[in-house]
Image (cartoon, rainbow, N blue to C red; front, side):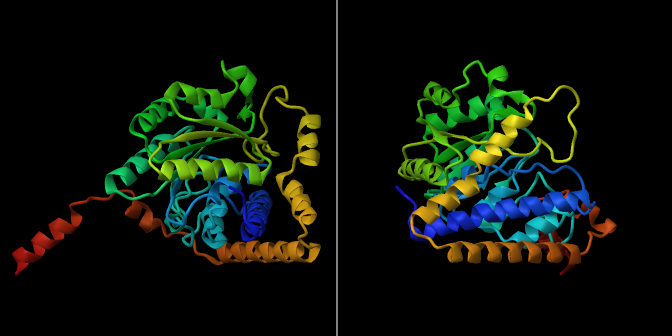
Amino acid sequence: MQLNSNQRLEAYRRMLRIRRFEEEGMRLIKGDKIPGWFHSSVGQEAAIVGACLALRDGDAMTGTHRSHGHPIGKGAHLDGLMAELMGKEGGICKGRGGSMHFADNSVGIISESGIVGGGIPLATGCAFSARVRGIDQVTLCFLGDGAVNQGTFHESLNMASLWKLPVIYHCENNGYAMTTSVAQSHGQPNIALRAAGYGMPGVTVDGQGVSAVYEAAAQAVTRARAGEGPTLIVANTYRFDEHNFGLAIPGEPYRSVEEVEAHKRERDPILLYRTVLIEEGISEKSLRSIEDEVAEAVNQAVQFALDSPMPRPETLPDYMFNSPLAGHYSSVAGLHRK
């Protein structure tokens, strides 16, 4: 399974949308327009977009703490995402979720989580829900290399395999869990081999190549939709920025400047794919048109966010509680009044 001609250009567009959105976010956080933490996925765009392009619109997805790019990779509008980063009422969660808790039902994002591995059981449960409802929906679960050492990873993969649930566990292996390398924290650093313990395929791909990621994800989606169960995909990628943008990590550097610069120079997924597209005959004019379009969309998103109001303090508890019986009580009270 390969990207068709339309998908190839869309892959470039979505990777660029993630990159420019993140770059603008980093500029805004320096200017105190975005509160809280900011975990950039710059450098990991191909690992995101390749997997998302294998999904249908109605498929579900869960993310991580480094998740600005995941809804963008699935085609989300940028306005609500940028407003959410700023904590504005116009955000997709009305400013209540912020950077690490995007939930965008318009593109099937049921959850992102600041808890390492927090989305894994939710994705498994979503896939179980599809099975119970008798629909062919697939759930894509993004996770990082640090999450595979969490108990919830093993519990979820075991359940998904046992019940042949339609879920894909997609590990963005950027080599570091905050500052701890895979070599220092994994008894088995070949993460894909862990799938064998649960009787499911484990696939390793070059996470800087969007086509390679897409092909692996498309095969996993086909398998899941056919009732053959889950797949673990490990996309080896690299984050160009710190774990949390702008936060100085004390102690000795955990990776060298040379290492980071080499990845930026030689393994930038957007530059690599731009070269591929030109070699395939896509004109510079076409690519520049996409680049201009993306720049305008990001500028519009920033303006939308700046213009959106802050949530009113009195609305603080409005989304903290939900009673499934509230409507029932209202109906009963109305009957008594009659």
